Image (tube, rainbow, N blue to C red; front, side):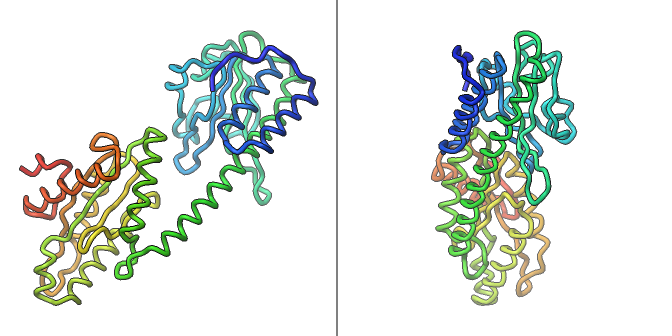
Length: 344
């Protein structure tokens, strides 16, 4: 959200009634944060503002909503990396869990158009421990508001923290439900996700990547000479090879990755981020180090596709990954190809 501060004024009671209603009745986190941010700006006379949410796994602050901030500035200040070490004042507020008054808003990228700034942490308590979920920054064209007036903004920050906590709880519930759904759709031989689950997760991951504007890597792997393994040792040898490869895949991928059995001797790894090639090369090396099955070595051919460069739909990405995988196999196997031309 970006816009001008409302011109009308409310009493303190009207202000907090509106804030409570935004949290209690809002079913969209961004809309709720935008409403609270607007109310805080109105109350304090701020000319701009921004609300960030902390991604604790990535140690990064992500801009959720902004108020009175130019689109170009929002794009440039969309995230703050390495919060635990960053010198950005917003990161300092996260670490200290205390409000911070800044005499020169130019030090805060998203509020650089203002003269001064007030930064507020968004903190909740879980089982007696304070947890920081994000921060709100308010920029002012002139001097900072009086301490008495600034203090009244802290309850609004508390309500914003509650809104984020509720959204996280709902998201966790959805993730758990999805996890149990995955357990119900696993491949019986390997214990990995089956084709049905992979299709669904790929659909969700592509949608998420498109919505958030982040990359997604897909690696398709196929056991080299699988038919020869079965001919030499029977179905038992083939099953043994599949289980060994599956174990390496399950042990080697990150928690955020999804791995499953895609076809008879084919596997898929979905890796959020741009590092699909690195992940695939590590998997190929690890599988090549497996003990032989009935005297024969195990290796895989892998093909990589990346969203959005290689495709924007699951079908497009799978087609590119499959083509690259076949090119790797034709080049002798035991290798990774990002595009068919690389194997020629």
